[in-house]
Amino acid sequence: MNRMTDFDALLTGVQFPTTPRAAAGRVALVGAGPGNPDLLTLKAARLLATCNVVVYDALVGAGVMDLVPPHVERRYVGKQRANHSLSQDQINSLLVALARQGKRVVRLKGGDPFVFGRGGEELQALAEAGVPFEVVPGITAACGVSAHAGIPLTHRDFAQGCLIVTGHLKDGSCNLDWPALARPKQTTVIYMGLAGLPEICAQLIAHGLPASHPAGVVEQGTLPGQRVVTGTLADLPQRVVAAGLKSPCLTIVGEVVRLHGTLAWFGEQAAQTETGDMAQTAGR
Image (cartoon, rainbow, N blue to C red):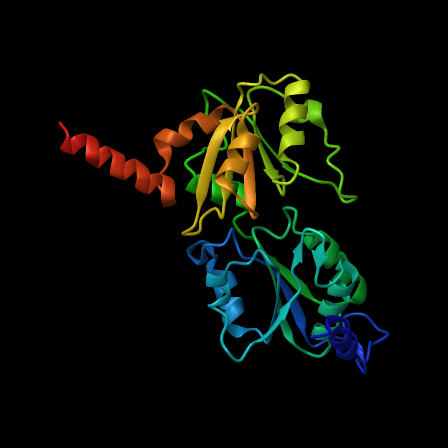
């Protein structure tokens, strides 16, 4: 399929009114949560059931897409590292065009649309074009994944604050605010940081955190295939490579990571813990 041709064809013949607020359609910017469909909000589920078209990202869980009725048009606009199906400007134009065709559009984004979801950019384009819109928050990965990994973001004994950052900047670099990320008594959650994990860990050590500082990476958080690898800033990159973790992953840095072994309740780690407890009980 020639995506550029299909995209251009969609825009061909669309009449763009010169006066604002002339569109009959509208766009709902909806957070799909971290992947598990059970974490979708009721309003999000209702909008998915009543819309005309869903424009969705790569990180929207398959279980969430299963809730979309068969007759609803689906438009995939996912972005993966160095592989964008459409540019952001094209996505913005697509949303405007669909709404101006009178359609009820759900713009479905993984996590929360305002947390590294470029939701603000898309709403700016809709507002400039005079397209009505609304926003439905979603459970962002920092909250959903950490909860399913048994790693509290804050804890009175370990972390009095939480910092959420992206692992790479708009230009693709990893030049982050390292002094802010390396402050003690806080939890740092890093989105899209798997590729830059060795550099991230090295910089955090260079800016004051001890090499023994706890850190972990969660793969496919909240989904049945969830895996959690924990370690220290010194050895976490090697542990992640040995485990063969692949995106999507979330990195969590902080003393709260030590609680994973005690608080794990979901997925593979919880199953292993339960099996181990049963074996110990049987051997008594």
